[in-house]
Image (cartoon, rainbow, N blue to C red):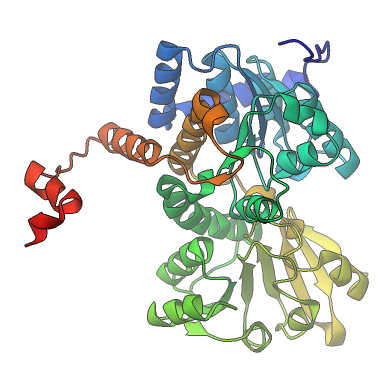
Length: 424
């Protein structure tokens, strides 16, 4: 397309020689992603993404990398970037070797990460698959030239969808955006089962401690918080929930959990997991009430759910005691331990969601990108729910791959939903 910059720069990764190891991780992820493999077959057969430009901002780990490679194999021109804390260097090298432009290094600075995002936007993508609305905000502020070719975006996270809706209410959002996070095949599985398992796995693998019998505080009881609470209880933890939404708090109570304000709950909590997607969900004043040896982990979608800067100022003698585990000495000889530097813990200190879960999420993302490429010019600016046919197709493909059959409505039952006279 006229006006699109041509680039000699292919990729920026830490060490291209790590590509063989990253490639093996990609291949293994593909083994457990039957729906994504069917999406690739569909895209290849219809040619719907051939020579179309797609930008992606997601953690560079095997499942995300497999999505990017799958789109490239389907004929798309794909550029991928990520923050350093969420980048596996061998995977970055492996995906770059397979035809994707990659801008991601585990040792990147915040300034370099903005440059990486700029590289993606400078390639003038027609569709972006975004994380926390990072690219969309840049396109509407510092990189308005990207909007000339940008048809639309698909957003991965709850926090990003909140941002996009705020932009839409303010009249600032100039393109259609699909809230992929709101697809049932995304949040009911990714946020609940994926985060629930992977967050607990990251904390336990990082500390080598026992969960059974410990008091665990979950701050936030949306789908992420529900997943963590359910799995922690299943492993023998005594779970307390803190909430600001009275309905969510009431739901947690009826699910059998203790409900209490954050500052009160922190007096006995041995493990605290934030799951809110908002800043300062766990204030320093509450951290100071924790018992000696308490663990802190952020399962939410923003990096400052608890204030690491103030915590470092409060406890200047911090030290790394295990990989991904930092000790902070507080008053009277007490310590708290932060897992994964306060960043989203299942990625900063773990491998992220199980691949079978991300098979659903990334199939939704790929088909949302396809929908925008085919229909985006007909859509109004604003935030749109994913087309229901995407959810249904992904779910049916997953069930089929598992050898599971289900029933179907009869014509008489279908008429019950459409014909009011059938209710007589």
